[in-house]
Length: 93
Image (cartoon, rainbow, N blue to C red; front, side, top):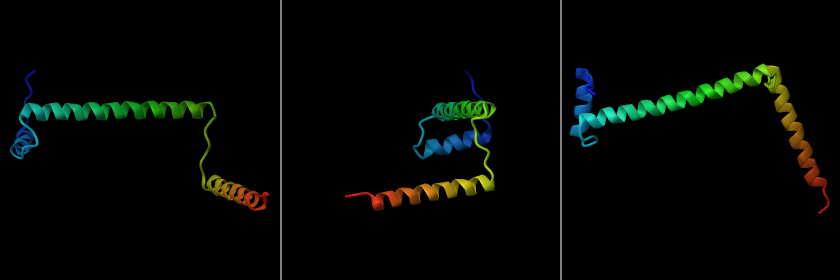
């Protein structure tokens, strides 16, 4: 495969070679492809997660998040925490 780099890309690769970070332009291209591959893998994982979330919402398994629902959730957490603390304080030892 013949890859043509832009002048800026060549200069970028040359600086990496001169600093000892890379050995050749080929190393630069291979590293770039490895990073691209990783980014695409992460993108695919994200899209699958997004698809799962949408399917969950379609099945009405999701929870609508509003300021009121967050206040209610915080209140519920506080109440459960207080009940647990009271239970621990009043339990026989």
